[in-house]
Length: 330
Image (cartoon, rainbow, N blue to C red):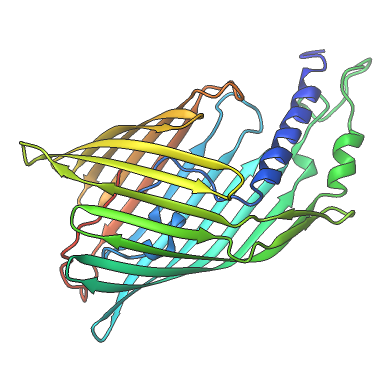
């Protein structure tokens, strides 16, 4: 008999933590450290804002060494187009967030409209789509890891009323979701404000009609790029704040870029972690990014979090050369 009652207790702790995070921020958007690499996931006004078509994804493993810890995936595609002299963008985002018994997924269609101004550009954007949440009782093994009870095992059991009572047979539900955002950009700066989960929908879980509400959340981020004495080197400080008006999270970032190809830097997420970032353009238009979160919070003891991104961007033939460069941290 291994781990005695530790495994069973561990799953209960994980379930309670899952409930806590979902209750506090039900159906929250997955957290990514490379937030400027996935701006359109935060703000729909960023869809094709630089007149570039892009296809990319991010994968995040959180709390390494903690069984059942969050795993996040984001896939996005964006396409710019013109109608007469007006600039538009459309996109699609798929995201998945797994933590313990729970899987959150969303599929969102995106649209943006860009106004060219004398000093920069102003974009407005909208997301519409669906979010789902699934409770998977089968993902929990209370028997010690092999699905079967050993003879004389008094520490494990094939089921648990605590889990069975909440999940019933396992459950899933779908709700409508929408977001709105605006973004202003110049050749050296960007700032965006968005409101996610405008409808504040509710998702029902289980036979007892247990409801999880999706709180409306507000996101503000921006940055400014400074040139150094050596024109090949630039420095970009940036910041990101998000809140549902009951909880807040903020982070600040500093990035150093060489020759518009290699980037590195560090972020601090207040009360949570330090983040080390690195990115490189493998070939023109193809960008690879990596980040590592070193936790500072006493709430979670883990080996940190790893995140990898890959994105390919190119300018469609019809698109005019854009005066305003793409602002991204990685």
